[in-house]
Amino acid sequence: VMLDGGVDDGVGEILRTELHVECTHELDPETTTHVVTSRSEAELEEGHDAGALKSICAQLNIPIVTPEWVYACQKQGRMQSVSHFYSQ
Image (cartoon, rainbow, N blue to C red):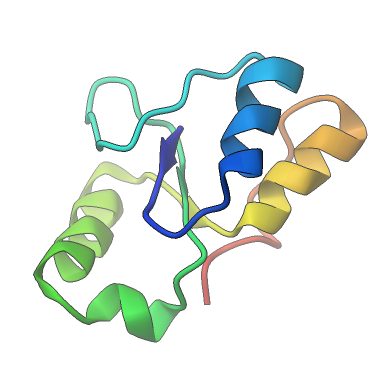
């Protein structure tokens, strides 16, 4: 799971310690399964890195989700569907 800039450190801690998920701050097409961001859809389209991130994730079919997805996973003790947690 890639943690985008601005995501609280607690989100990464939950992923690592409670859900046993490897986290990074860089997108790796080979290993990244999800991108967690607190940026809005509009913010993801602004700036050179953000637009590229959204485009690359779309090409690789990697979902961009909000931190609330992590909290839902934590609550259930396992990975949850991303359908209600896409970045908007």
